[in-house]
Length: 130
Image (cartoon, rainbow, N blue to C red):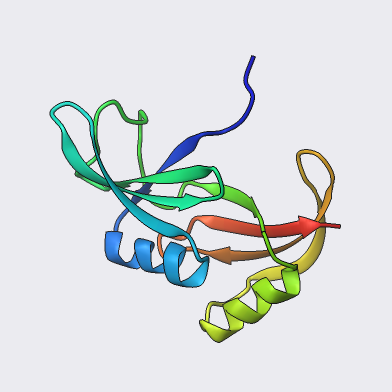
């Protein structure tokens, strides 16, 4: 019945720092759109054919998660470049790797991953096929 993930919502305590990390460090594209009732300008981070919609803590949009809080996510992204290029970019941007490279089991295959934390302390795994 379900084919793939279209988007997810990330709640952030600091929208500026969040956008900076996902655009500057991870290379996602910032998108602004109008959504909700009443219509409100919103921000999203686009990558591939998916996106991350942003909610700011205390200014979330309805409908929303039951308990939206910053730092509750554990996300794994498959990189579009070799993991060594990801590591080099993280080093260039002075973003600390907290673990890896390590071998893991992904949704469809074995993966090789590094782990970082975003500004809200969400755990971010960046992987390549092993």
